[in-house]
Amino acid sequence: MLRFDPFADFDAMAKQLMGLGTEGGRVPRFMPVDLYKSGDHYVLLADLPGVDPGSVDVSIDNGTLTVTAERTARTEEGVQWLTSERFAGRFRRQVSLGEGIDTEGISASYDNGVLSVVIPVAERAKPRRVEISRKDEQQQASIEATAS
Image (cartoon, rainbow, N blue to C red; front, side):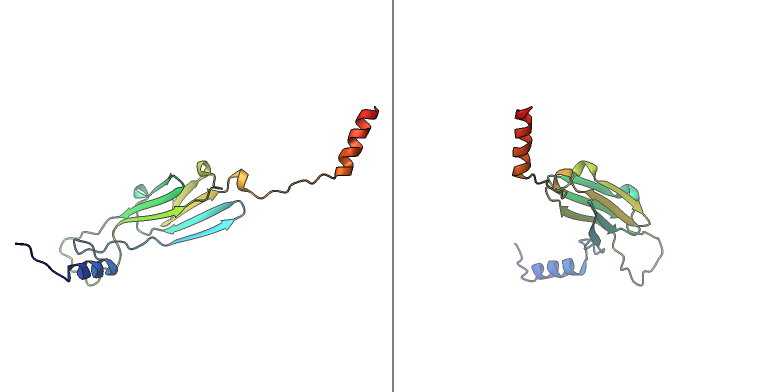
């Protein structure tokens, strides 16, 4: 016999909003990032305090930059937790890259809990000046060339 629980969906949604995982532990809600443009490149800064640098992965697939990292939960025997607000688990953040990005030139570094990803603008997408030639200069140059 199957039981119908009309509040099961509400419970699941409330747990998700409060950041509670299926095991009752807290799971990360998001990875805070800053993104800015400086000259001919973008810089993405992601806060990952307490994350082992070996667990950080930066990948690019089909125009999407994906950052994943994992912070392991603390497991101390015989400890009575009074509060536990620091998230543990897998973090993931995705950023869509525009067409004017040099994906081959993307680099990343991790220092003091902050991941820095440098995203260069492709040469073809950089602003440039277009030289304007004057029609009378072109005609003058062609007349001189035929007269010689």
